[in-house]
Amino acid sequence: MTERDFQAEVARSIPWLAEQAGRPLHYLKIPDLPRGPEQRFSPRRGYDCFLVDRGRHVARELKLAKGMSLAFDALDAYQEHCLHEVEAAGGVAVLLVCFRVTFSKSEARRRGAPKAILAFAVPAWTWPVVRAEACRASLPLAWFENVAIALPRLRLPPCAPTDRPLH
Image 1 (cartoon, one colour):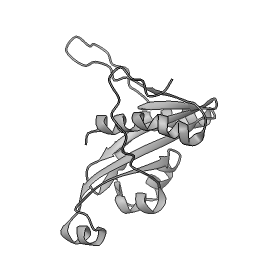
Image 2 (image 1 turned 180 degrees about the vertical axis):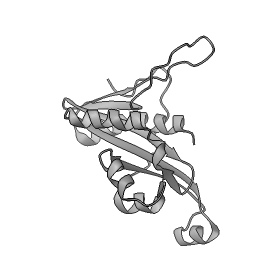
Image 3 (image 1 turned 90 degrees about the vertical axis):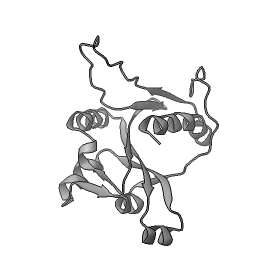
């Protein structure tokens, strides 16, 4: 799974989320800008996507961890600043973290599976607090399992390229 696959899964889940909430949600992925020798300047994105729920802006930054932890520097200072600005303006800012892990033999026996794809939501305001308290450079999967909001993995059909996640 790549971060692009994770973004596609998040986009496909929006209609299901709107149905569960019983109200419309507006979703927008902030597009990646083309890169290449002809591109002279690429403005940075503060976050990957957002949705609007009952007039409230919900910023979402997606991170993919391929090991048993996510480094604190995965969220750079500019992204952290932009997410903080969303919260200061009355919106909601969330980190969506997906772990794609292959467990050690002993961990696989304990968990009952050799591999896993696990997703979690973390309010963005917790990131600097946890980073300040942690005595390490990354947060382990166990922290996410114990503290973060576990997100169920939905088995949804893929969207056609012309389909929009939600109007």
